[in-house]
Amino acid sequence: MAADLIVWHGPNTRSTGTVWLVEELGVPYELRKVDVFGGETREAEFLKVNPAGKVPAIRHNGKTLTEMAAISLYLCDEFPQAGLAPAIGDPLRADYLYWSVFRPGVLEPAIVTKAQNLDVDPRTVGWGEWETVITLIETALENGPYLLGERFSAADILIGGALGWLKHFKLMPDNPRIDDYITRLHARPAYARMQASNQ
Image: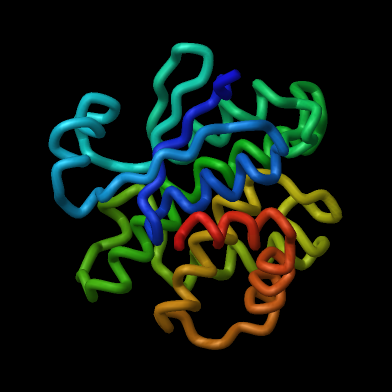
C-alpha cells in the first residue's frame, strides 16, 4: 500500500529539513528526489507540483503543500502523537510558533544578507541585523538544550538545520552555545537517517 505522504526532496537543499522532520515523526512516506537545479525532472514533472521549482514540497491525503515552515506546522499537527509540537493551550505553543516562522521570516533573510555582504538598513526590512538574530537564538538556548527548554520540537529542526548549514559552509564563527546545540541535534538518529537521503 502506498504511503499517504509524499515528500519531494532535492539532495543537499533546504528540503533536508523536511526529510529530517518526517523521520522524527516516524510515519511512512514516499521520498521523491528531484534535481531543482535543472534537468528534465524539474521541467517536466516537479513544476507541476510546485511551479516555483522549489523544494520541499509534500502531498498528504491529496493536498499539496510547499514552504518548509508551513509543511512543518502542518505535519506536526497532523501527527500529534510524535510530540514535535506543543498542543493548542500548551504554554510552549506560542514559543514554538515564533521559532517556526523565525527561520523563513528572520533567520534566512539575515543569512542571505550576511553571506552576500548586502548593505541593508535594518529599519527598512522585517528582520534584524545578523548579530541581533544570533543573540536571540543564544538567549533562547540559555533555558535548556533546545529552543523550548528541555523539550525538543520541530522548531529545532527548522532553526538548527539552518545553523548547521551555516557551520558547514563556514559562514558563522565558533560559538560554544550554538555549536553545542548543532552537535546535539546532529546526534539524533533521525538526522542520520535524513543524511542517507542525500546520497
